[in-house]
Length: 484
Image (cartoon, rainbow, N blue to C red):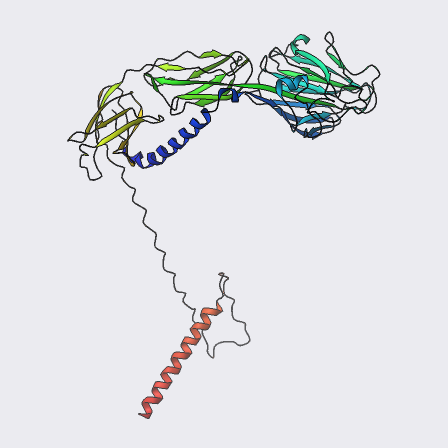
């Protein structure tokens, strides 16, 4: 049985206004050109712990897996990126833009000798994408770094899977930091057979010597084994990702369908984003790591046949057109609208809108008996706006089969405010009788009164004054009587 729910109408007024404002906001956001969705993001770091027992996090946008790390470095700090950064003219900068103002990790070996490396291991909550991200090691000169990785099964990843790109020097670059005053333009050397990135042949402490990597297989862990070759070296680590947007629409019977939950998963099946369709049926996820193997699925509307997930990628650009179109037979729904005194609202214009949608499903007029008929989706929540007055609404659930709504659609009953509790009268304190007479022993102290939080002497004093005042009045009256 389908029943009306007029008691929710008061709340629906606020919800109706809120939904309208939300839809407007989504519409304004969606109005931006598609190219604006591309974003290049550098990772942010946090560090905790102490010497040779550091822990931390690295965060990247676009649904990149949550990343934690441990390190046996004798010193690990985050640096703001205000004085050292990857310029847009560096090799990674041409892909991800400038890292100026973005944090990076600064580390030392476990000890300043060739036999005490610092081991830093990044662990990804789920396997990383197979493209769309990179890491950069900087200031490799009087030191060296051995790089290894594992996959989701724990097996070692071939060194080719690290995706070595090139070595370079980030100094003397357009829009770059001021460094390498000696103009050495030092660069490290990458050995693809051993996975060792080693500094210059003389182990001279220089500035800006760097290399970058773009892994081409999913990684579960990434480990950097860093050791000194001379002096007191440090090295720097950056992470970066490129993201693009995905978008589409959800429709039912060719009409926009709002509030449809959507889920985006990566190639490993991990949920990387969720969203809902707007009142105009559109949905979008503004940033996903630039890679392949994504799928998007939608919760099936009641009465519809489930749609297969759509596979897509964000390798080179935004991916629009990820549309879901459902077909559902409508049900002919009949209902009667009455006023708060139970009288039918005859010959009154109404708009019927499914909750979550921007546009009305049906616009009609009640008949002489206050009744209406409309073709609606089965088992869906609807709101009726009466005569264009957004404060005068009725809520109901459409039947699952063609037929009438059993109860008349009346305005909600205003709840009776609870009665205000009257304060209880404060009981009057009665003073304990004071016994004064020949039997009282003046040498014995009077017993103490129990502590009650108030001064017992006050009511006793008042009582004594009243007694004395009354006695005086009696004496005075007797004297006047005698005189008379």
